[in-house]
Every structure is written in C-alpha cells, then in structure tokens.
Length: 569
Image (cartoon, rainbow, N blue to C red; front, side, top):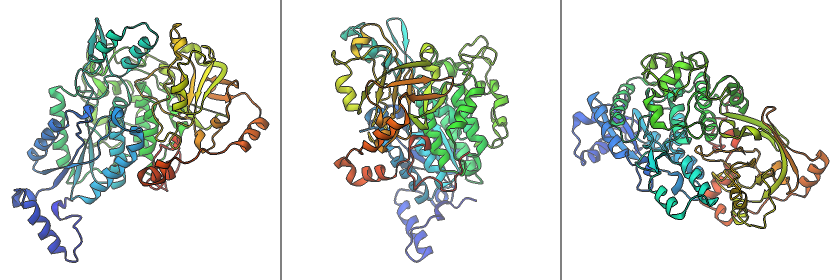
C-alpha cells in the first residue's frame, strides 16, 4: 500500500513533527496538499553533459512525469551518478558498484512508492537494478535507447563495432588519416547507446526478458517518438505499481534469470552480460554459476543478425519487431509464467508483437545465424574458476588452436610494446595480457580487445587468439578469452605464464590450458609475489573497491552487498 510522503520520515524524536517539517519545506517548491497526498513515483535523473548515451534523458523524464500524473500519482525526480563508458577513469566498471550503492541508498532514503530507473550506457542499468534489487521497492526500467546508424562512403556505420573495425584499418595503413577523421564524425550520428548488439543493447534486451521493462522498450531508437511514448507508458505503469508492486524480489526469480540467459545467448550478446547478470543475481537468493550460461548456450541458437556477430544494427532489429518478436521464436526455451513488471506473466506481456513480412534480422529457429549461443564458458589450468569467450564473434579456424604465449604484464606494458617492430610475434602466437582484472587494473577495463600488433595488422592479420583477465566491449569481435578467474593480481594461474609457454584453446571441449606440468606451475607459484598496492588504492573508494570487489565469475560486486544466502545453482 502507498505511503507517499509519510514513509521513511527523518528522525527528530517526534513523528508528527517530522511530517510537518517535511511538508513545510516541500511546499516551498510550490506543491499543493492535493499533490502531496498522492502516491509518489521516484524518477532517476542520470543526465550528464559527459554522457551522450543519456542525451535524451531530460525529454524522457518529462514524458515519464506526464504518464505518472495522467495515472493520478506524483512524480518526483532525483539525481544519481551517471557513468559513460568513454568518460570514466580508470574504467566505468570501477564505478558501477558506486552507482549501485548510490541508487540503492537514494531509493531507501526518499519517500517513493515506486521508482523508474532511466539508464542506458553499459554499466548504468546493471548498477540501477543491483541497487533496486537490494532496496526492493517496486521498480521499472526505462532504457534510453540506441542511436541511429551513420553513413560513410556508401556504407552504414554504428558505434562502436565499426569504430574498432575502421581503427583497425587505419592501424593497418589501409585507411588514410583524413578518412578516419571524417568517419569519426559519422560513427555517432545521434544521442543514445551504441547502435550494435553491444553491452548497452544486450542489457536492455535482457531487461525485457527479466520482466523488468515494458515489451519493446529495448530497441526503440533514442530519438524516435516511440521512445517518448514508451517513457509515458512506463510512467503510467510505475504509478499503478505504487498500489501493489510487483517488487524486484517478486520478479527476479530463478526462472527470470534463466530467461535472461536465453536472451543473452540468442542475441549474440556481450560478454559483459555475464558479469552484470551475475551481479544482479548475487543481490537475490538466486546466484548464477557460469555453468548455467554454458548449459543454456548449448541449446539456444543465435537468432539475431546484428553486429558484431552478424551484419545489421539495433535500428533494424527494432524495425523487425524487436524483443517481443524474437521471443516468439524462443517460446519453448522461456519460462512464460515468470512474473512481469507489466502485470501478469511474461507470456501475457509478449502476446502482442509485430510480425514484419520479409525481415531477415530475426531468424527462425530452422535458419539460425549460429547453431549455438554466442557465449561459451571455458575452464582449465589457466582458468580454474572460469573464463568467457564470445564464439559468435570469433574466427572459426581459431576455435581449436595451440600457440606460443606472448605475455604482457599489464595494460601499460601491452600499450608500450604492441606496436614495437622488434616485438617477437607471429599470427599463430597467443597474446596474453594480465593484471587487468577487477583488482589488478583496477576496475577490469575493456582492454581485453588487445589490438593486433601493428606489423601483423599491416600484413593483413585481422584476428589472433587473445587471453586476459580483463573485459572487452560488447561491440568488439575476435577470438578473445576474457574474465579469466581468478585474476593474475590475486595469484591466479595467469600470473604464472611466461613468454614462450605453449597454450591450447579448445572451444569444443570448453578448455583453456597452459601446457606445462603441475610441478613447474607449483614452482612458479611459490616464487610469485603480489604486486604492490598502488598509492591511489590506499584511501577512499579505491581502497573500498580493492578490498571488497569479487572476482569476475561472481559478477564483481562488493562482497558486503551480495546476498549471503544466495545459493549457487
């Protein structure tokens, strides 16, 4: 039942006075008694001049407020941290948990009966949902939406898969400086999140599958009028939720998480989806093991033909019917009785969908883009607790590969040496980068997309096996083993690899191993010493982060925020 302005009163030792004082101050902003008697819908304001993915947030807020008021409730906007992938030092992942804490505490502190979570850029929606799951007040997600496609020399472009592709062409001296600068102006033609199936769009699609956002909300372009109408509808639904929910704890069930994993695999989604969904699940009693991702992937084909796994862009996915249409192909794999934020079940929510004749972006089950899901989980003596590879965006010829390790001790070491003409490296070697995990970097940067050494790029080499304890952007492509756990900085086996060691990748067998015997590994482990703690990590948030961040297989949440009763499944 709604409590409106009367809930969560500041403590002055006199409850009636606390309410009297609260009303006195808020009336200074011009509110009437009628407005203040209504249920309150909180709306997160994640706008920032440093966050172009959220450039439409002010417009979305106004539409959400309209929907709330049309439904008879009172909208109240409050700010939280806003994180953009390209404008966060050292990484956006480093700040995700801080945003989650901010969001949780604001939801707890403010007198809101329900909340609309407006987010888009990679880490923002995961942070918001982590916080909302812990606060457990009725919440609904509104993605900001993907940007439009750009155009350059007769081809369509989308950030940021084409950012990486064109930069690779420039590094390989197959593209001029003038052309790369012109392309730079065309890659991001509007506000909104990346226009491919990167992390932002992956998370938005997973929110629909989880049942936390309204049907169709993932794919509407940020600048379309439909996005504004979706915001109004979300506000209306949030107002209805003030009178009985559902709460996140009612939606985030084991069945809902499995639905989200089916979605992640079917869209060829970002490897970051594993980290973020695991962190969200860690806030509930339904912790996810890496084996669940792999098991679901073996029976779930990739059906969405979008870059970086396929050819098209989010704009085209939306035109083809988006997530509700995709779910028609996945019905037998989904728990359709899972509860949905729209009211009723997931099955109820997707009854209405657009079936577009002749579209080829969403494939049928008998003509999948890939027969297995986009992501696989690897284990072996290099990754005792697991690693992730995006097989949907990797080279088929490298799925079984043995090569000589070329080791970089850090992101800085890799940056300094990768283009050195004297670097001893061939296309058959395996590039290894370590100390780039949650603790080691810190913040597990998206540096796992190790660039092809310049002298090989100039020879036309476009893919190599690359291994690290870092992440990579969901927009990236290549045969890249990521999230190796435990990470090198905490003494994981990756810390023991030397240049010249042989490494074997066997995706079919789900293995990643360094080919040295246990005795030699033990000898190296005994000689290993932990890297010194950087001065910056000896105080403040950086100290908190270093001392409490979990490993990648657990979602990189803080150990004191995860649910202690979450049983692995």
